[in-house]
Image (cartoon, rainbow, N blue to C red; front, side, top):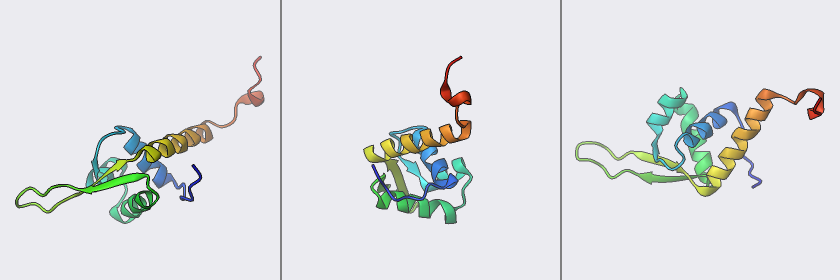
Length: 104
C-alpha cells in the first residue's frame, strides 16, 4: 500500500488509538480525549484518513434530544496501514540493532 499520507506524530497517535480496539466504532470526541489532540488537529487527520479509504465513517442514529454524532472505524486497509506505520514507528524509536544485528 503506497499512500501519500503525512506520517506525523499526531497521525501515528490517532492510528495507534484506533488499533487499541480494532473493530470498535469511535467518536471524534472520545478520540480527542484519548489522544489529547485538539479538534483542530484531530478532525483534519480523521478526514484525511477517511478520504484515503482508511477509515469508515457513519452517523450515529440520533437519540431524541441529542444531535447525531459522527463515528469512525478502521477499514481493512486502515488496519493494515495502521499496523505497518506503528511498527515502523516502534523500530524508529528503538533504533538500529548494535553491531548491525550480528549475534555475538
